[in-house]
Length: 256
Ligand code: UDP
Image (cartoon, rainbow, N blue to C red; front, side, top):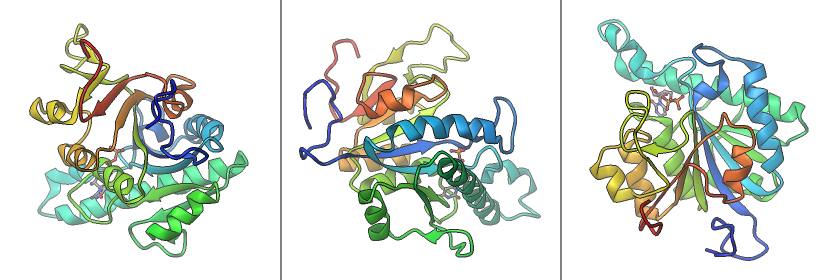
């Protein structure tokens, strides 16, 4: 990787950085609400538009604004857990279609690819076709998670990041990084500017699934956890500015 200020610069000069952006379902609704908010998705869409020409952008969207599999865990006798997780995956398809429409309305070429087959509304996820879209400058929105129940879209993001050879995984959240303790419970909790995969796993820090962290560690795929609600932060993260928390193999910052 380059060390020319932008630490996320693409390894080969002339080649655009390939970014895997994970957006949770929360980003698709108003704070404290559920369902879809097109104005909210448009705010994200505007930020994406500003980076769409700077990087190859694959986006994994969550579905928590509509349904997470565990939301129905109290009804296991009626709705089997696998079914609730498939419902959660379908929720991500709804968000992905909304984001695609928003991006296209802003003049950004976008394609949804889903790990669950919903052929009437989008392409199936096909790795090589996805890469081709990215090379042609289209934003690819990856829906349906991994296509398998019992995991989350964080794991899907890590897996797609690995197989698409992403240079970085940007995890957009409502908190501005990884904290030693829950910052809601302890407002004085310290925030890491950098932390290793091993420390994340050893301390069981909850910002991302352990399975997702393990995948990133195996590939040495750097992760940046940052607050997408701050305007311009997606651009800053893509530009490699030091925002949020970087999760890497070896920390280098003193007192990180
Ligand atoms: N899900 C799944 N397999 C996957 C990805 C997602 O079963 O590979 C289901 C799971 O129930 C999850 C829901 O889809 O809770 C929505 O995804 P997620 O919770 O990751 O959304 P987010 O929290 O990012 O909005």
